[in-house]
Length: 166
Length: 288
Ligand code: FES
Ligand code: FES
Image (tube, rainbow over all chains, first blue to last red; front, side):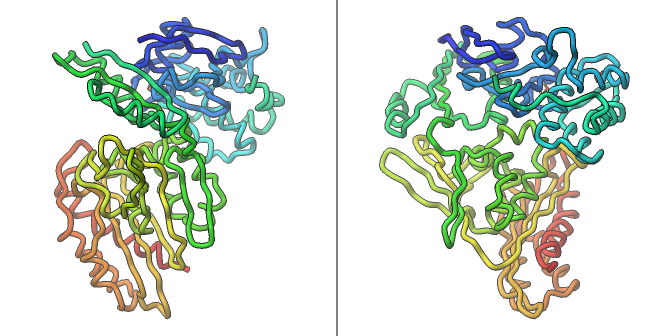
């Protein structure tokens, strides 16, 4: 039995028909056509589907779609303002972190949410924070270094948390 | 093919009303980190004939997300997430072992949605929060249409995925008594991060002049449920907490467990490492 679900997606209110058994990942990809969250495993292992839900990183394949009613969902698409990339996105690009790029949107979201809570992390803490995001091209070192560089301010100020709390 | 329905009641009255319908299979949803992939798996498989329809009941709107304390107890609502518990000052002060266990559960993007109540009700023999709750002698409170009842952690689990809860009962909160001893948690996984336990153990010790005044030990992933190891406790109680005494007592865990081979480890290996993990948990609980 489908029902209408309303929530905020990348700052905009959306209304969409949702099935009770659908995951947030399916909703984003199949119903709303937003393919930046990837489906690597569909079982919470790989992190390719990571999005930010009410300010916190979550694996969207683990979230039942109807439960996001009234909440705020941000995907990698919602991080850049116009042509300007989010510092994390720019850093990943400049460090050449993505290889095939499949894990990248998930990495971007996990790293962004992590820095919101922990703006001055150590390298160990960054590794720990990204431990739920698998990269089959094994670009971990560059992802970690890029996040470290962002935390040191090398890519400019991070947009405040409130920017995600539309 | 079965149809799915979804409700998110905001009161227990409404919840119990929904539960009265016997024509449909009721499923409780807390955070979803275990429930949702299981559901996805069910949907990917070839469908069984004549299955009842399924009602998914979201428990997040019942106001069970809180951590409060009084002079003697700390109370954690069942839908409080692991991320919330791990950041909470009351828990940090009273039960650091619980924080340690939670830190070892998956990664932060899972702990942001996974709830303590979900971890308990899944009744996995490998659940990392459960050994700690057991040595802290936590009580689990179940609420059904006829009222609430409190059950001790060690009486709660009856098998893998099975608890004493009836089909129309939900876990509402967990009560943990404050105590004067120290507790600790130790886990062995296949790798450092993001992994399920091969063996996990928790210990609680009260000591005076290095004599063991009270001790509780629990071990997970080596039997159909998480276990209290009374064999180990009996041997250590009243003794001096020397390296040797702890080692000998820890060996006793082998009598209590009945491990199986699974994808994470063999029964043989689990028997070998269980005493080591127990010993490390006890040793961590006695450092000042
Ligand atoms: S697709 Fe969600 S964690 Fe892999
Ligand atoms: S860049 Fe290929 S999976 Fe990470």
